[in-house]
Amino acid sequence: MPLPKPYGRTSYATMAEIHILQLIKGLDIGGVNGGAERFCMDLSRQLSHLGYKVTICAFFRMHTPAETEALQTLHSAGLEVIQLAEWRGNGELSSYRQALHGLEYYAQSHPVQIVHSHFQLGTLAALRLKRQRPGLIALRTVHNVQEWEQTPSGRLKAHIFTERVFPAWLDAEVGVSQAILEQLREHPAATLHPEKIHLIHNAIDLPKALPEIKPPKAESGGFIIGSVGRLAEQKGYRFLLAAMPEVLKAIPSCELHLAGEGEQKAELMSLAEQLGITSQVKFRGYLGNIPEFLSELDIFVSSSLWEGLPTTILEAIVAGVPVLATNIAGNRELIQDGLTGWLVQPADAHALACGIISAYQHPELRQHFAQEARAILPQFSIQTVSEQYAQLYRQLLAGEA
Image (tube, rainbow, N blue to C red; front, side, top):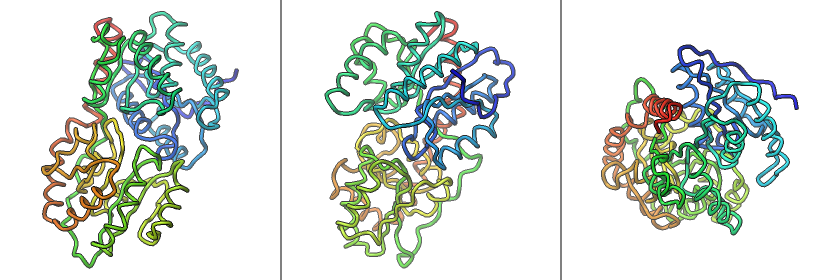
């Protein structure tokens, strides 16, 4: 079959003989896709700077403004991108089969040494390539503590693939947080191959100079809380919306701004209408300039029900915005309750409301927490993390990992 036309080519130097395929679901960042895909983009740019040849393989084309912007960014960086099939929704196997054939066609005509997957179906494809090409290195990065849908079929997939097939047949598995690392180590097949499990944190591209932390504005200026992410069940936005009536009783000038698209958008907008808070809730949709959005906020709220290591919290810390987050694995690795931010119980509208009101009532703490939270940033730099991946790749190629 004809290969989809690439959107640019990688410039490379000393490590050019090492060709890495990065597998992601798609480039609709903030819509169907999220933090894993954004991380892969940043990682690929840094690996390219280190001299590796990197190709980003997006399994599905989604035709959204976010995808167009991501393609332009990658093209400007000189990275090769291939898109393999049209997105027709979750569970559409014909699209996946088309993408799989396109990937195999590409791998047959290019001397790829490493296939690195960032999503489950990509990992299955990587293992298929590994069977076809002895010596090919296949690994995956696990970006979330919950990988499959919470249904009987999803639990069966986890039982077969996550707990047994992946640990046995991949060359390495990387967890982006301590919680994921511990989860990977508990899988039955992983107990036979503990050396395959690695911790490399999620990361972001840190600016050369951090923005100044703004002093809290006067109460007459209103109070804006906000969040960034897919409008999906994982993000717990229905609990955040349910918290707003209680928040508005204490802070009538409060507004909630949500940046992102997703499958729950209509449902969440309907919920806001039912709660009578539509004038105080702004669904901002896809935004290309997240730092600018964050600069508008008085506090960033992560209401997620589960996470891996959320880069949106890191971005808020960079922007100098104090963070209130749910007390879940992943969030706890970034925020220390009462020291660098606030942690509240997940799936609890009242706890969210109390946390937001407390943050509003203590402007001096907001500024203090925003400053203290920045101490963690160096370890979550994409430059640091890309060096760690480069070292892992070299070890795997040398048979040392």
